[in-house]
Amino acid sequence: MITLRGLTKRFGAATAVDDLTVEIGPGQVTGFLGPNGAGKSTTMRMVLGLDRPTAGQALVNGRPYRELRYPLHEVGALLDATGVHPARSGRAHLRAMARSNGIPDRRVDEVLDLVGLDGRAAGKPGRALSLGMGQRLGIAGALLGDPPVLLLDEPVNGLDPDGVRWIRRFTRGLADEGRTVLISSHLMSEMQQTADRVVVLGRGRLVADAPLAELIAARPASPVRVRGPEPAGLAALGARLAAEGATVDPDEGGLTVTGVTAGRVGDLAYELGVRLHELTPVAASLEEAFLELTAGSVEYAAGPTGGETR
Amino acid sequence: MTALPTRTPTRPASRPAPTGGPFTGAVAAEWTKLWSVRSTWWTLLAGVLTMAATAGQLAIYAVNANTDDDPTVNPGVVDVGEVVAGALELTQYVVLALGLFAITSEFATGTIRTTLRCTPSRGRVLAAKAVVVGVVTFLAGLLLGAVGTAVARPVLGEWGRAPLGGTVADVVASAAYLALVAVLALGLAAALRGAVLTLTVLFALLMIVPVSLQEPGITVLTRIADAFPGVAGNHFLAGDTEPYPAVVGLLLLASWAGAALALGRWALRRRDA
Image (tube, rainbow over the protein chains, first blue to last red):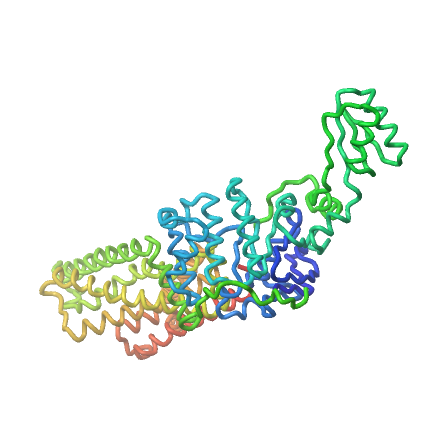
């Protein structure tokens, strides 16, 4: 359980996080979404006691992080930078972490095994780790104390498709075990695959906090894409659909129809004898919902991206 | 989110209870970190070589001064401990790098965020680092004292003396001096964060400022210089009785180290990592 109450962080005149009040509960994956610069990383750093809030509170299981005696047993975290010394091996890095929280050395081998890092990879110095290995090592560190709360900042960044699939399955498994899992991302499509619930930030403010399904369902009806080789037939189909009250947008080689189901479009085409090559319901994506929500709150509308790390 | 039954996790009970206290853990972590980077070993080797070279050189100077044509500057027979203490003036900068890098390398590489996530109490982190740095530099000081003695004694020949008790006491005093200076470096580095800045401030505190104060030979300024950590340490190492007893020099140096730690803790608590 992560509790944010009126959490605010200002850097000089700039407000990175603005009066954020949210509860992130156990047993589900919560996606923490927002464009770059929305304040996601700053919020996570405040939860972990790294940054001091200007106002408000960030609590983990009801307590501020800085008061935890054995924090690795309560919260595991993967930050944007994995924080491994370039000259220190991954195993020594984990061993130091484990010892700080009274965790036996054998647990280090367990978590290395869990994230699929073999002895050779774990023996490499930090500077020799690939991005993917670094992410796995970071997750191994997060799991050391078998914590009930996990915070992962952009965990799929730089991972290959295998790694991305692995993270998805892994975080799903962690949530199914009853843990609180908070994953930040600026990739909406990724969250659509992973999250049960999303918390959306825009310019440091809470924009949405809702179950994923609800957010998508709140979108207007899904459009249907229709394509075929007979322009005249398609035009007739379009006219008929419009007569039934659907909105029809003709485009190159086809139509985009809103307001009727794909099934109804297929039936009408059959009735009119129009050949179709494609009939696709276009699912309302989180991407679109997200863009609508954060429209107007995007800090760098057309500016550079990737300025998330500080 | 209300307290649903999911609050009771169905995770396997693989989580063993933490053993030892959080402070013991923090010390163990710092110890593990220190010895898992090669630079620690290089620093110690550099310290040994610097000590050997400097002690040898100072011993040669002492012999030369006794055998040249100008009898007015003859130091006579010198204690080996004196030569070792003299060699520390340079060697200390190598050793205090251990204290310095124990925290500046964490800021430079971002590992400080890992450290503070493992041990969120800033005071506990700094105290653990101080224990590890203090113990390691004290032991290194004993080794360096032995190395310096082993090099200087044969070079001094008839112009040197090394009474067992006195020499052991000198070596132990050197080790204590190094440990305190290294902890001073650690505390300052925690407040200043950068290695170069910290080293500059240390140079100023240990050498530049007090030497500038002593230079004009004005009593008031010299007395002020006596309060500086390096000068206090030298009074302690030399076993002086003026301007204050040797033990006061030790206490002054220890106070500087303690004040630096307090400053470092304050800065760590206040600033974002």
